[in-house]
Amino acid sequence: MQLDLAGKTVLVTGSSRGIGRTIAAVLHSEGCRVALNGRNAAGLEASAAELPGAVALAGDMTRPEEARRVVATAVAVLGHLDVLVCNVGSGRSVPPGKETPEEWQRVFALNLWSSTNAVEAARGALAVSRGTIICISSICGLEVVPGAPVTYSSAKAALHAYVRGIARPLGRQGVRINAVAPGNILFDGSAWSRKLAEDAGAVTAMLEQNVALGRLGSPQEVAELVAYLASPRAGFATGGIWTLDGGQVRS
Image 1 (cartoon, one colour):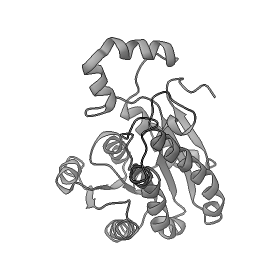
Image 2 (cartoon, one colour):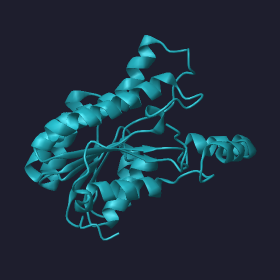
Image 3 (cartoon, rainbow, N blue to C red):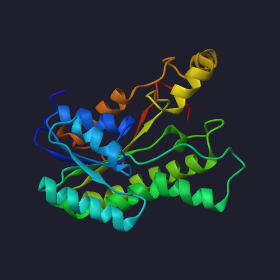
Image 4 (spheres, rainbow, N blue to C red):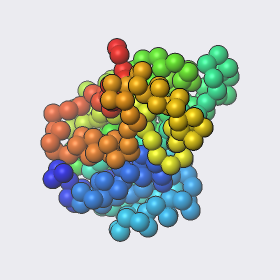
């Protein structure tokens, strides 16, 4: 896309597969030096091996001490840090009305603390490079999506509040932060992959009724928006929630 990203250094958390893996691949194709992160060391190493020069940094970003270690290692290996992509997260939880204290803690750790831990660990290095942060969120944080777990929706809404609120203090350090809120994204192992296998007709009907473009999105489309936000072309963008849902959100 000619985004002037060649030579930039990037840490993508939650990037052993799915959207995070594609984000890492797109940034790598733009000439970035990329560090991948995930909890499964074997899967992470396999993904990194497909991107020449990429670094695999196993670690659990829901734990502050692990986040600090992963970021410090990324800075040491890459020399500095220009871009942080916070992609750890999962929409799998209990049905609405079945929440427990333990489930609230688990889902918030994955979908909020993983990002706040990463940002706090990286903000010093990003201030030196006047870098940028992109958090991967969901349209579930923007409005009520029928059937979506309340735990997940609440965590993503809190992530949006965090991105908007932290943008000003980070901006004073020369650091930009934005979030991308995807809608229904299809990839191997995703919920939509399973739903299509179970009842493709129901998925088609849902898309026709709820999504203006009438289709599912792809990880590539998410990754290309992330690449734009990471680039100098988006130099005046911060504190924004960038919706990418094919026209599903109504509010």
